[in-house]
Length: 470
Image (cartoon, rainbow, N blue to C red):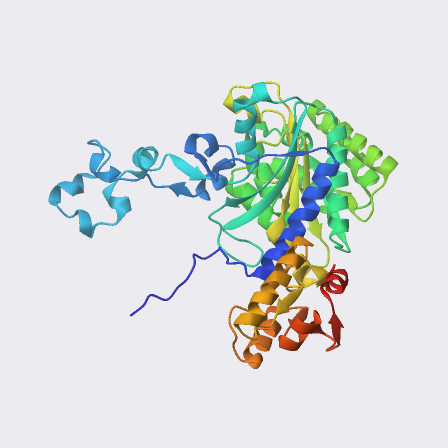
């Protein structure tokens, strides 16, 4: 019995119309990236595990797809790496976790991993190619990434990120530019209502400082970042599970109730963080971004200060961004932030960077949900020539070549099947026009062109046909 074809959960096939829609998103994003001076690069789909592991926090490491080395590496394990139970010749009957010490052998059986995002590979790229780059270096990259998340609506195990980063400058002007890029791309995609949420990691460090929990900053930020998912009670429960003292939790609680405009929230935070130098620096940096954005204006975006925004990635050190489409049940569709120390992990210090990422797959779902894809991007083939027989096909094939040379997409049906079958094929493919050329049309040097949407039919010579279809 033949195996039923399937694909892994969290992955998708894309039909031609879907690919056209995705390319519309990619082209819109890359056009704006180029306008702001970003140049394209590409990196491998997998990296050495040592490049990726430990850069995304404990949760990130758990979600990484590791690549099993070729060969039977289990047979080459040293004594102490294999359970003593193996001496009883029951290898095949035991679960893997009882057979081997996974912590000891992971590095031996899996030394590569699929990339988890594009930012850490970019940091590796900058260090490796530093002598070939001019700094500040502005790059964009549109490639797939992989995460072993539980598949659900808007969350996939394989998805495409569209990143723009600049490294080699601490200037906050780049944060302002990235806000503008968010605004222009999503406006050009015609998303009607979206918010760019912004915070600063220094503010979060300040919160940890005033609560006396500087050594627990990761636990605190991971917990409060889940506020919109689990609510205030859920965050407090997680803080307690991480052994954050009640006194510190009481100082954190006011964050959950802060509201008002950006200026008023900023003033509250300035008062709350009055004793924290790092926290006040974060406030100053955010105020600069808001002032500059106010000076240049935004097309459609709402820029909002969200003090609970943390994003779970350990490498952020300054501004943090997250973008949500309002009125759509979907998580963040874009994100990013500043990372001052990322290249230092690869031996290159004092190389500050800031970057953003568009979640193309979630943006696709938003555009589908709101029916925002332009009808023009899914239009079918411009013209299909009906095949009436060998002589007619030879004549039509020359016409098809002339149309293609004029930049018009055209095809000839491959066989002289019944007219009903050829017309059904044209309908199924969404062909815009059908061209019919029989022996009489060959004698007259004309083409009968039928508009498949309106049913209108015209007699045209080849020059008129090219002019019509251009």
